[in-house]
Image (tube, rainbow, N blue to C red; front, top):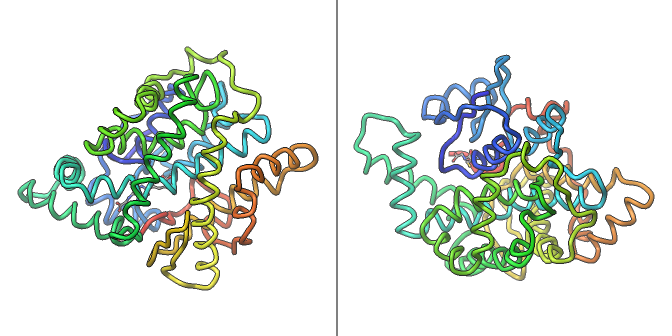
Length: 359
Ligand SMILES: N[C@@H](CCC(=O)N[C@@H](CS)C(=O)NCC(=O)O)C(=O)O
């Protein structure tokens, strides 16, 4: 397969970590301007990184359904735990990593001068291959990213301390479990690791400002980033996973219950009401003018259905874990309206519904 993406992209990194672990061969190619602005929009109705072309010519989009689809074909060893409620909790951690840590990752890269200058040049050189001076392409790229993903995503002087603390709180939560064991749920990586890996690998451990914070504050998280990247299924196939969701990771679920799930609930209400932008409050801080996302309605329904499809003891155990970690009420707060994304259940072979603002 060909993975069209970028060496500096959050979701390209998430997918590459998974593919390398599963020892699934791929070639990464830069998703350049022509493909982004024209070819993928014509083929898939939109463009995002990564987009994958399989050898048979089919195109895949969105890392979450891509990994689920690949798991069905390459199940050994599985990255989605079989037992409940650890499976449900792992899917929730994946979504938290995908959607909630995106904002601090964008803020650190595009609001801090050292990070912005370095990454704008690197990204411009990789994906904006136009016959213009690199400095000019870099400046254009940095301005676009800050407009769409920082100012355009509710980050301002008032919310900035909360956005930065979203990163440092997660470092503080992950440090003790990752000092104790190699991966979040045991001796080999799962979807919980790959979900947290996108932000941690291609942003927080790479961009100068958050990387310095990680090295000082959370050396075990720093070590885990390299461990996920180096993990190979053939070497850890028989390694055990924990049989229950560990108590030392419950604070991560509680963090999702305070922040990520209220964000998804507010997004779903705004989508139902047809509001293109909305405000939401997380951890006592109100973010204003956040774009309403069809993809996030779909993502909320996916995690919610993973709970509602359970019955008997599994359902009771899942409700107990989510209740204890303050996730149950925000997960069930809003009955998500039909998102209209992928109504035929074709994902990852669906059309693109971008998680974030288009520009
Ligand atoms: N839900 C998607 C999200 C993909 C995504 O948003 N990727 C970012 C880059 S890491 C993107 O495409 N940004 C497009 C842009 O900057 O316009 C996934 O899981 O792959």
